[in-house]
Structure formats: structure tokens, C-alpha cells
Length: 287
Image 1: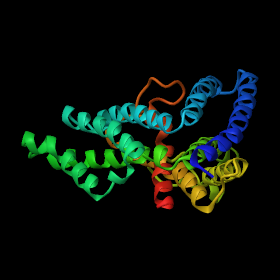
Image 2: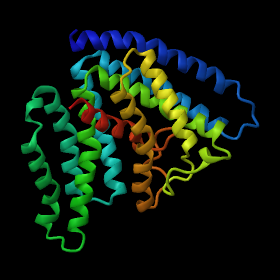
Image 3: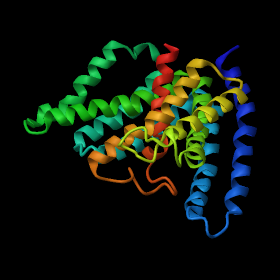
């Protein structure tokens, strides 16, 4: 079966699954009583989901060019938010932006070029602004944060292009997994062992949320006909570690959200943090 045919068949399964979930979610948030504390936020989040889901699915409907466009678009916005969080200069921001455009393009048109040679060039490019600027005080910090940003955002987003239909399955599973984690934490995370936080970085993230994310990601992958131990582990790992990783970055930066333009979520990084880690793990599984 060709990748294009597999993607088409997966989309045929994904559209009713996502559409049904949005429909049920819309009814649920519309009928929430006024006394529910999070009613306004949940409604904002649903509206964002309703706009983002067609864009994500539509990108894969357009084939490899659509996957490239999705990866590049997400990358450009995400690296801009990251550069602000990491207090990087214009040189680092420009380099990260260039990588966010170039790496998905290579993944689409010349994936064989994404090897050790490309990694060596990226390493040098990450340090170049600080080297040329002679920054003896923060140069190493700037270079290290730039390398981390490269791996976290542009490299991970190459998975949208390289993984083909698996990227679609992981993206949908992670979206449901984030909701499952919230539901699991709300239902099971009030007391007992499951109420223990995963990390001090994000005390609200508990083992109950892991249970909810595991159930949701597994169920969605099965519904899409794409379940495998590797993809399930990648999606679950993204749901568990993605938010913690971004929380670590934001805590050092002293901010609550990566941005404020995405209703109900904050910034783009606040929405795709799980997806980034899941794609990186899926690339490892697929290697």
C-alpha cells in the first residue's frame, strides 16, 4: 500500500472520529451550567479545537506539500515563542526560523540529506551568532538553548513529513490523549496514589492523568486502525513528557504561558508541546 493511499484511508477513519468528538464536546460545553468554574475556558478551548482540527487534517489531505506547509507554519510560530522564552537574540531567532523552514523542506524533497552532515552544520549554526558576537558572558548558554530549540521544534516537526500516515495518527492520538489526561486527573486524581504529581515542575500533572492519557491514546489509535506498541508509546510519551518539558522552559523564563493569542491555551507551544515530543519519539520508533 502506498503512503498516499494509507493516508487517505486513515483520514477516512479520522474525520468521523474527530468530528464526532468535536460534536459531543460542543454539546457538552454548551450545556455546562453557569456555576462550573471552567465553563468559559472550556468553551474557548473547544472553539480553538474546532478551528485547528480541520487545518491539521486538511494538511494531510493535501499530501506531502500540505505536511510540509503544516510543519513549516507551526515551526515558524513556535520558534518565535521559544526565542522569547529563552531570551535569544535576533541571530538565534533568525537561525531557528531558517531551520524551521529548511528542515521540513529537506524532509519533503531530499530526506537523504538529513544525516550527520546536516547535524554538524546545525551545531555550528547554533553557536555562530554568539561566536561572531564575542559573547563571553552568555555565549555558551545561548548556543545550548539554541541547540535545544532546534531539536525540540524544527527537528521534531520534520516527523510530520517523514512519518507519513503515522504522523496523522500520532497527532490525533496526542490531541485525544491531552483531553484524556485532563479527564483522568479530574476523575481519579483527587486522592490516593494516583493523585501524586509526576514532577514538581507541574504539580497538577498526576499519575491519574497518565492513566487517562494511556487509555485515550490507545483507544484512538485502535479506532484509527493504526495501533502499534511503538506508536502508542510515542503518543503517550508525548502526552506525559511534553507538558513537563515546556513547563521547565517556562518556569526558568518566569512566565505562565508561551503566548496569549490562542484562546484557551495561551501560545502555540502550549498547544503543541505534547505533539513535539510524540513526533520525536515516533521518529525514533520508526528508525
